[in-house]
Length: 201
Length: 201
Image (cartoon, rainbow over all chains, first blue to last red; front, side, top):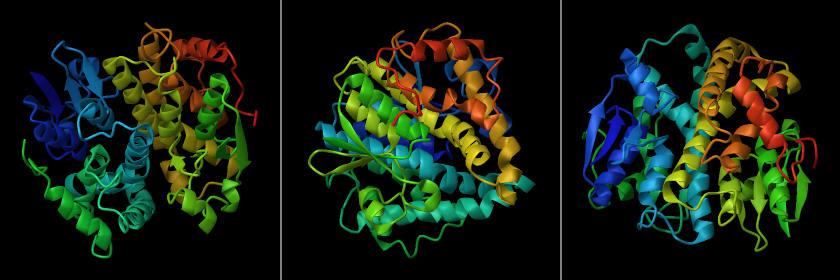
């Protein structure tokens, strides 16, 4: 059975949990408390030298890190990833957008606000991250005004990648009220078969 | 002919330039001065709402953004991307590592040091970015100690993605002297057929 090395509040872990569930693939979840350094132990670093969850452990004992690499690998050959070259490239464009322009702002601010006392550097950079987070949401809003899903009018791993931290952005004090197309898209994702919430392990 | 919307000092643009050249695909390069806001004009935002180079313009006039999505798309079906599922996933793991853990630290510090006066927020966050940049280099160093290239003992787009900003990290005051395996790998990349430097448009 596949094993998912995970941390329940993580949107990055949730991407893998949601897709595995929607694909009907059974998996065992192993929880790590990232706040207690449990992903920086020698044992964990053997799975992922970069010290981050999620890590997918294959049946042969090999490991795959990086949430979007994991869901791309799992989605290959399924309806969650297009088979045509250009739509595939567009899925990847949105997944890299998510990890570069969205997650480091929206997920990081959420993490600071719900888990930690902020230090001086974090307090200094907070306004810039809030602004960049809203810029990412605005890019999504404009794209979704004319579309039901991110690529090819069909639910894909591009939607899963972007849904993970957008639907909990309010926990980082991002008010989604003015992003109406994003709000409608969140509802469409929530309505997909075999949907599970981020709180479900 | 393919058109690459680009900015010559950008490592992200360089990834596409290098791969296109190594694939022997002719392309036209269009230069934008990102410091003068040329990627935030209405005309540019029609190509990429996220306002960033590189953007690859296909022969049919469609656009693809995100450097790693571009090189993944171009490499499909070539020796620069493995055909087996798990090595493909490993390539993607390293490409997401690059955009999340490497580029925002190493490339951003380089950009600040060579192009701009730093503002107070940037000065406050600089030590943390320097530390995170060295952590990324250390992850690469440990991986490369036992390997010639990042995946499958063969030059791939994982190497191109990570080479782009590693080989100019010294411009961001990252001293690579103690990363001996990284240094040897940089030489191996530099020795690949049809290699071009980042300064070549």
